[in-house]
Length: 484
Length: 99
Image 1 (cartoon, rainbow over the protein chains, first blue to last red):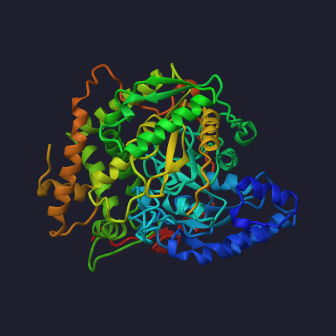
Image 2: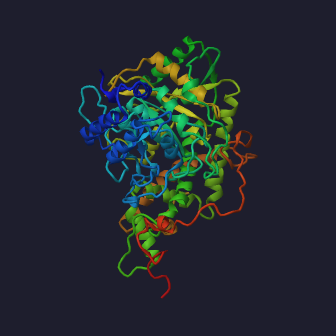
Image 3: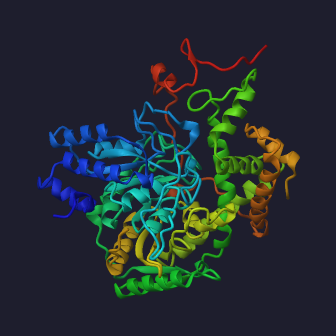
């Protein structure tokens, strides 16, 4: 029999239902794998006692639900009651929430088992996991013939590494500009960001509130569908939560592309695009065509302005959201000798935030400051409206869009020391975030160096089902079986 | 628009982040790099375009909801104070504000 940790989430569900193994055995197999792979630094906190107690309750019949006994890792952005939650920041070291986030409460309602809290870029600001105050996460993948350690992507890098290395059946991620999709692509797993408002933001530490969305990361599209169904749903504590029914995505999944129109945005074919990425994209187009889809060329004319728009809107919202870390109500506090309350604020924030977070808070503070607000922030929100309009027009001619997820495979630590070079990694993922659209990455092939590459599917608002179906079609056609 | 070291100090003050003299030149260079890059948005013709106010259009549930103006929570003082760096007599405590 294959190792329990190698099963897909769907296979674990079936095995538990058939009593082929117990929830405790399944949890223990993962806890053992976590202990043997601590060098990846995927988990900030492991919660073996909690996991085994939750699993025992499943075995005893005290807990049930569609995810009963499924061992998950939780990104450290989600508040889990009684478990340290830090957002990867020194600012929140030792913070133990006395409440449960909306998303994790849904997963617990459905019987899931929590293995621990997953490492991430500080406050979800990063694309490589190098900004975590708890140390970088190392990808379980290595390039062929090289021993160099590679980034797992970010910001949900701990989630990506843990799922790829079989340290959990699936994980929660969050995506503000690509933080689920880019790391999923880098480690050869699937991940979906639903429509803005589908998953509750309540109890998820805020980065940029008009962009932040939670979503699942797992080894198959079907596994993502199971988790997405559980994670989504209306929450009246989140003012932008959508009060709409959530379909059973796993039950509805068919992978059928016959009669579907797939849009290929011309502007995503960048000058100087990596030929491997271009070839993979062409393969994806051919796969969907042979599955019966009609391929349509579409235009998203404002694509090139998406990244600069994002780097105004996201830091602006972050500077406001992160104003709460003042050393008074929770988290770190530093008081200089003889200092007053203002000195305490400034010293606390200087000591608690890392370089990238400070940089973004300062950019956000500047673009919102008197005299610059209209030139930067208002203009960015106007361009954002144009970007959303581009998608609306494209979706008059197609049902889903197919693009690469990232412009390159995973890179080495320190390879993108210039902030803008790092930001450019999200060139294909940021536009859908700005428009609030559902989007997913599916593993589709390997680079010449043997590293995973992903394809991205973007859908209409609320059409997660269409995105997952196209994802499944790609997954079947690609037959991606490589593992770290 | 580019920022000078005085502006960087002012931004840091507004953001309540203490910066040392050593940090200012590096920060100035980095902020100018990023600001110079995002400046390209100025070339987009946005005349007649309304800034995005809500991510999801109201037609698909993006309208903000009303709720009764009523207390929905409370009586959890111990939980609220549990993570405070300094709590005293049921309050958050801070260094002296008034001499």
